Figure 1: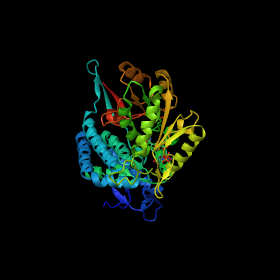
Figure 2: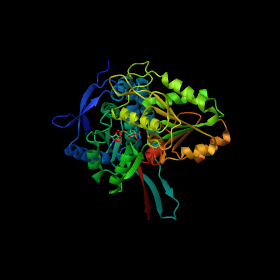
Figure 3: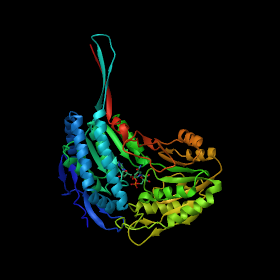
Figure 4: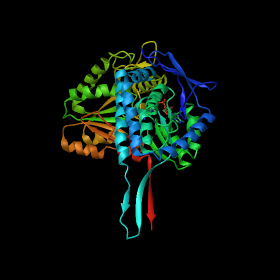
Length: 476
Ligand code: NAD
């Protein structure tokens, strides 16, 4: 049995308990039970965090790359040692299966190890000048970062938000989701236990709008990093604009999946069905619109619905379960509304379309076909376990549908035709494209979108670059 920890904030290296602060109740989405009460930051708490972040930045910008690498490597080691406990706590808070939560731990450890190497390769350049003159170009950390991470990847979202600034020599104030605080605190604790000074990385929680307004109004913060919905991202960008802060925005998606008739549909379904229902579909890069060539459509729909109906849904702590609950009561409400709207407009429901059980926030794996373009779900990110399957005649029409929406995060493609593979990679408007596989991310690979899915990348060398500014020095 893993005990759920006492909740706190982490400000200037100190655990800040609730005391007389307002609190947020953290709920287990599989059972509806209360896990703990999370303290919410006051304005004074945030000012204290800002003052510490300023001090932490002065300290950390002068650290050596080797020192930063040692902290990141040490944290990666501690994460793997604590993987079982950290993963089970993430499952209790968010609902995903323990196997998925463990994969997140591994992803964060991999990213920290990658950054440990990459931060030692932050280079500048010397420009050729006449004798007696010298011009050099250097990279410097941008400054204290305010980072906002959502609940759907309770470990890897905070891991990304912390790893890049720390590698680059910045300080960071993390506000992770109030729904999943212990997971974020678990990742931060590994960094602190590996020797990171407490003023370099801190964790606050609060009323999201109050925290973001307070932090982004401060000139101490030089960068905003946000993962979440496009609506909130746009709002935060406006707040950051007043002070011209640097931004990395990882926003919503509406992943198209193009399936052509030259591939084995069984192979596609075996890969895509579990990928669709990973984390109950609450994934920004989730495959959402399946754009399927007409002559394989009926078989594809049937195979999809059979596999979806066979998925075992239940508490993510049960090792036999393949899909857990949705993370909060907003999601099943949204699923009900979107599925009802689609069916009312003529979509066909093949399986699911209903809540499950009498406790927690479960919703059945759901498959819809022939969904009209004016249905809400064809235009808004479902962020839940609903797959949309529609038939199309040819490549041009399929690409047009994929690019129809203003989102551009992940796009998946299944075809064995090499010339078509190249055309798709070029024509699809997305930050991440896969051909005949489901993997959109790796520590060394940039993760991010275009259009309404945001700008800037996390992970890869690009993740560190996003935390650096460029300075040219001209000497005579
Ligand atoms: P939401 O937009 O209210 O919240 C998303 C995240 O942003 C949460 O972690 C929340 O704490 C934070 N947030 C909200 N308002 C904020 C503010 N003013 N300042 C700072 N942070 C703020 O939505 P939700 O109900 O939690 O999730 C539903 C939608 O959010 C989904 O439909 C999906 O589009 C989007 N979402 C996207 C991602 C992603 O990975 N891109 C992750 C989670 C949620």
